[in-house]
Image 1 (cartoon, rainbow, N blue to C red):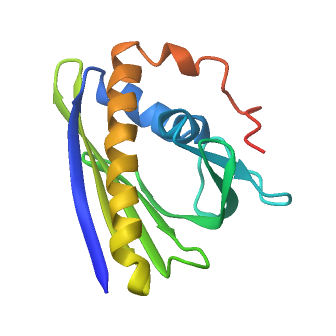
Image 2: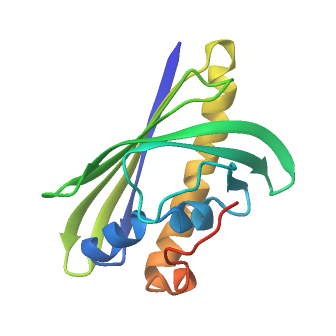
Length: 165
């Protein structure tokens, strides 16, 4: 069984700025916190900026409760034209298929339309994981809107030396 959803937001930031920050694992960590924490597994550092490939992370609910491992599978970084897209084609021992498309489009001067499109297949666990994902992505987009309004200032200093382990 597969379930999915799409969430969209208008960000108060230029599309080029959003695209630049979207390519950093630091953004993923920031917008998921404090609900979910990602830690790179030994031998699988998270590249900054993202590149295509599989990256292993451990997940912790509220930074404390272990939720297991997940593969972040960056498969597509479409940057040539608008809309720009990224695909995380991930999976874990509990989730057979996790497809997370991110799409950006300029919406006018200083604004960006941002969308998360999620597809989940986890057998009998699918409805429960779908519900958690729906809550997580609503939280992520709320934090992303606030971050964009702040000019991404809370991310300054997260450059290539970011250690998410």
